[in-house]
Length: 316
Image 1 (tube, rainbow, N blue to C red):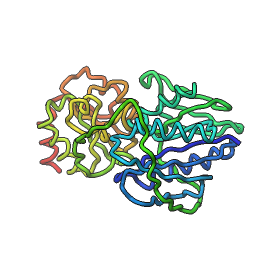
Image 2 (cartoon, rainbow, N blue to C red):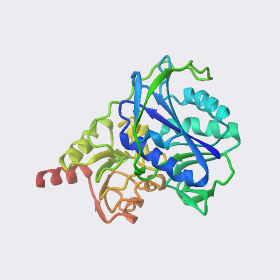
Image 3 (tube, helix red, strand yellow):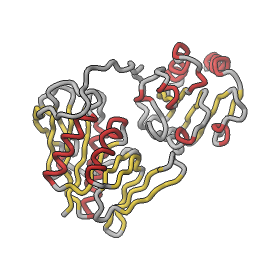
């Protein structure tokens, strides 16, 4: 029997579907000889955590740091590393979040393990775990047969439903603060406008560098609210500080599969296209008629986005 460690950061915005998806993967890989354990890092301040479908896991542990840890990446290097060594873990599984992409490579390097940052499929074939995800900026798909290899796998695929299983409530252990090279001093996150979450949204309106400035970002939010869509953003818009990273779509953000995806002022870089491949219809608005986004758009509109969106708002 091989050991698999699942890691989930439980914060105020963590959804029950995230617990369910990890439980579904754990149940699936059981047929390949993996015994799964779940490690929950809780930063909500609660004394206990209710883990949906927790009975799928052989063991569930919840820990909390004794002091603020930011995105917890440095903290998790120590906590996950300790859990891996104690259980002789073969694979570590988490979601493809920015935080996990910080600690994941460090754990993989310490184990001389394979690292796949954006697994879209995790399947059992002939009793062996096979994972598939984009690499090289999403230019190609890599399929890895895990077999007896050690691996750190970050899942970025669709929400999954586990088999019928019971919920488990576990007490949160106040863990010793792990000492690392990075000391968290403090942070002030960009406020999220709230609204519809990106994951699972049927309509998404995303803005890019072509929006022009943070002061104009309200145009995207108001249009998205009008059409009852989730707000998304390109990596460039996030790096400019116009929108929080939780709204980033693309290879280094979230993968979305809406019925309609509206890209406003987005050029269509390959790492953004990697996140919208599942969209059924893509509408692109850009001033540059040669923008790459038009090559994959179902509807392309060349012009000033403010005028175009203003006209659309009047019609709605």
